[in-house]
Length: 75
Image 1 (cartoon, rainbow, N blue to C red):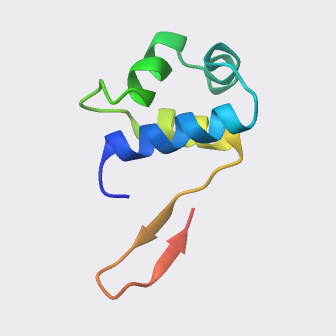
Image 2: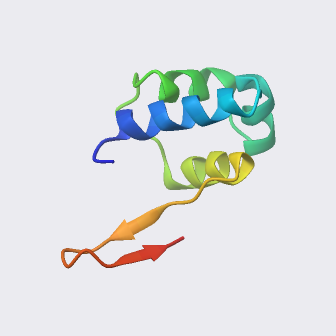
């Protein structure tokens, strides 16, 4: 994934596949449901690292950092 919008879309798809509502995920992640909604729809220019990692943790998702050589470090 290359953009924040693509990450938001992936989060939305995964959340729905788990049968979870935005409000549930947002509450567990400690953010406003409107913030999660805007993120999932790609209507944010920034989404802080703390928020992103909290949402990913609630959904059981992770984040891989890929360097120029193609090596990945999972977070």
